[in-house]
Figure: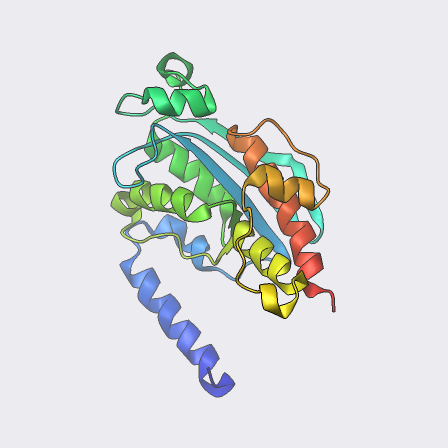
Length: 215
């Protein structure tokens, strides 16, 4: 976009979004993000359908420059309105009794949005988590998450493709989180725990950002 128009256009888009924001206490979501800051986020759910299942656990961690601020992590159990599927329990180990004392989804979203602020979001298969969060916040705010989203599996794919000879471009790449972490030489944590997954995604983001910026 022509730089002459970019700033006025951004102001117009922001004004339009703020006009449609159902709760003006959340105007901060549209502020300018702090320089070199991101939030890595992950959710555990009642199942694998983003249109019908619900969040039962949220983990998030802030990234500042090349540092993952694990001391500023966000961790919350959420009380769902529907049963947790047996298949989901096998994945994350959270049972209905484990989340029975969790907060309700509106309170969870209020806390999460204040933790995220206007910072861009980072995650592993982030589209799924964002879809569930958007479903939860839309009745409250009338808008969806406005922040830019950065997918580490896509970053990893780009980095791997860059290292392949031209005749191998487009070849299949193993995008599993365990494979990605091992290939990047990063420590792994117990997977399918929201905080652990958010931290692993944050570590991968920091490493991949540096690798992709290298000549």
